[in-house]
Image (cartoon, rainbow, N blue to C red; front, side, top):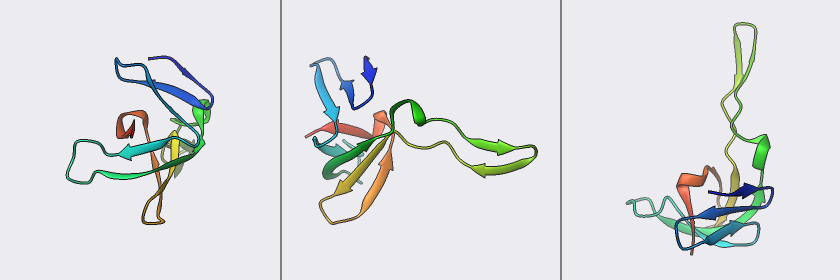
Length: 83
């Protein structure tokens, strides 16, 4: 899989997920829904924040997706596919 800021290859068909792409969130699960990618956090995602023994935040998700119902979700590559 090739990844860069703003775009990630998904699947063997070479389809892309990028900002402004219509996507399926949680594809092939009972929770599947649809939306549009509004932000790609790219290399900023995936790092938890700990200071000493204090856990500040879990790892961030790569994609911010505005769902069709108006909600906003943050998901990783495995949880999003082009629609």
